Length: 354
Image (cartoon, rainbow, N blue to C red; front, side):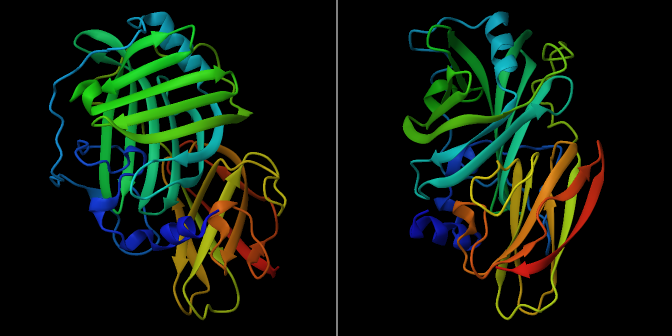
């Protein structure tokens, strides 16, 4: 991971909001959500809220249709897409924005309810990106929606795009913004193989995000999805999902601020980079004198996980999600169970310095 990327991740909380355009998280002009169903949580201080701040760029509404060679989507296109998506997809992001690249984006796409596929990746307690895919009623028709956004520096950005066309030969599904059309947000998913999912997005005609997700773990559906074929409303909030609160503790008080990390996987991990794949991860900063920190993962899928926790003393864990010399670590593969609803808790002591 490049030094510039490490500095970005460590300095993220002090960047001005006007610079933040990472993968549609806080893209200028994206409409804020009034009710997103799951506010972000923090380990210290007040949680972030939604924003109606005018950032100076608004969709012009000049285009709401497709302009390439694909065909208008039908029920088969939506069905094929929803069956192909479930799984843990991992890759770096080339965001092509002022913040540069993002080293690891792990999207664990699973059902959040009977008609919504959902995934989320967290930088820290205040900054995250989430995807949702569902059938919604738009203009009286069941329509496949890609919902995209998240919190960035405490400001919520959330946009809905609808399926405009499907090219079955190329394996491409093209989505455009409900407000502003393809001229505003134009996002295409291409399933190049069953194990390679490429997302390319433009905003206001400018390259904005490129992600070549690789399927590293399958997620099996319990039949055809959506389980409930009734379309949702075009303003539904995100489905209610569980929360996990992890208390990471250690014995010797910190002598300087240091990042604490929790990495969750669905398989056992060693301390070797790449030994397993992250399903969710989050970091928080422990202040001087601390012997513990709470890290909260909102909108997490229920189920069993293996957890590994670290104090990242040299500040380089973001690129690998694995510790190295000088870091304080937990005993590997702490069992964590996330209940189907409400807040689950786990306590992980850090016992070994590498």
